[in-house]
Each structure stands twice: as C-alpha cells, then as structure tokens.
Image 1 (tube, rainbow, N blue to C red):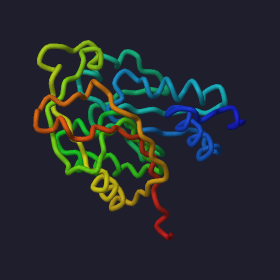
Image 2: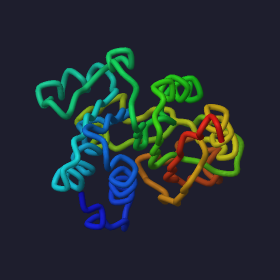
Image 3: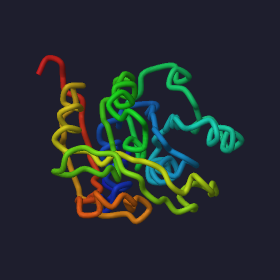
Image 4: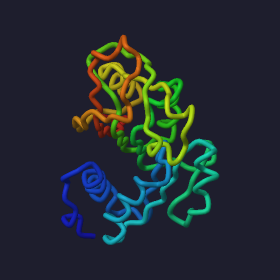
Length: 214
C-alpha cells in the first residue's frame, strides 16, 4: 500500500495518513466514531484509504434518533449503534468530531469510550482553553442538527479546561502527540452573558495509548 499518496493538509488527511502508517499490515481497521451523525467522518476517511486497499470497519455510536434515521444506509463497512455494548470487540481507533463536550458527563463518557482500548484517539473540534471548565447554553443552527429544529436549536455544552481534559486522558493511559487550533465555530456560540468574554477556541487532538511496559 502506497501511503505516500496521502497528504496532510487538513484534519481528514492527517487522520488518514496516521491510520495508513500505523495499520498498514491490518486486514481490517476497526473504528468507533462517537457522535458520527450521518457518517461524514467515515466517508471522508474511506475515500482517502479505500483506493489504497484499506478495509475500514466503521461503527458510529449515536442517539437512537440518528440510528433509526441512518440504519438503512448501513453496509458491511459502516454500522450505526445506540449502545457501546452493541460493538462486540475492541477497536483500533476512537474518533469523535464535535461531540464529547455535548454530553451530560464528559469524563464518564470518555471513560466508557476508552474502555474499548483504542490504540489512537482522534478528537476534532473540542472547545478547550486555559479557563475553568464550565457549561453554557449555546445556539446551534438547524442544519447542524440534520434537520432537527425547534427547541433543539438551543442546548448546553462543556467548555473544558485543556489541562484538565489532557490530565484525564493521561490517567486513562493516553499521551498527546499532536494538537492543532481549529478555530471558533459559530454553531457553538454561547448565549449566557457571563461567558461571552471567555475564550472559545476549538482544538483538534491526536492521542496515542502508552505501552504498558514503557
């Protein structure tokens, strides 16, 4: 497989590049995608790796609404699940794009996701900063909700202290190997007046599981 055909100009290119290098001898690469919606992450990565002969086993963990909506699009490489226990075996990669900070208890959810023992954790568009961790109401445009509107236009997300998040991942056995500033995204515009002056940087993280013997 010629991994040199992949450049690393953006997030999906970088993920495809690392995946191709680390799993070049694998017959199948199993991926858990938390909050993967309609499967955008799968389609972006697969179009880069499938032509090179890589076989992705992509499992999206989503709310039951999304599972019901997209289940008809499943094939042998792409599946939707509403419970992590439905994914039968350990995974190679944990992938999440703009999702972990949207759950009620982000630490507990991270613990659950990492219980699948992924070698790599790829997290994109997570709001991290030097401020204390806080939860705030934000506005999300209807198009980011896959057609859901009404009361779901407004919801709560966590703005997490970066050191706290990375410290938690370190306790789970994962070390940061790359971090990039993704920028500010207006679908997570805070509504609470008391937090309007807080930094709203969203970052991309690549973490790797440490060798137990290291």
